[in-house]
Image 1: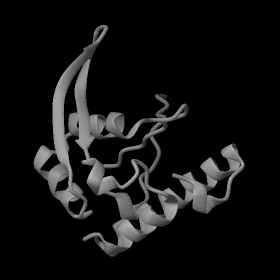
Image 2: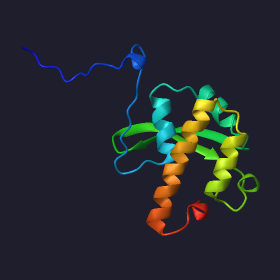
Image 3: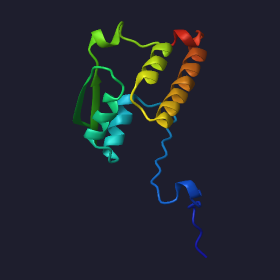
Image 4: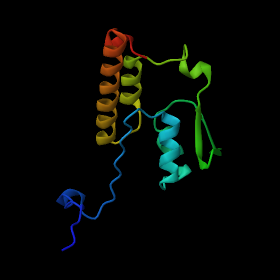
Length: 133
């Protein structure tokens, strides 16, 4: 008898593609975006998603090779004037998400992700969550 390690897909996900990411040691934003482009996200979809944030930017994508591996390298360039002092504090990120043209479910998920990140950063650096940038 063959044994399969495949699990049953929950009904709400049946017929949908699911991507599981396990960045056990962290992941940089540009690495994540490059992986999404490699996985099938189009540059047009990425540009449209970023435009919804309402932040002036320039998207630069190029192929890079590190050893035997090749991948897209994504650089989202934000002019200094558009980013203030170079970093956005957690409160600014919340306000940016509130004002962004996002579907409610996407906005809620983004808020949840940034809240978890801000909590972790505050704990690691011994600072208040409002000081996280």
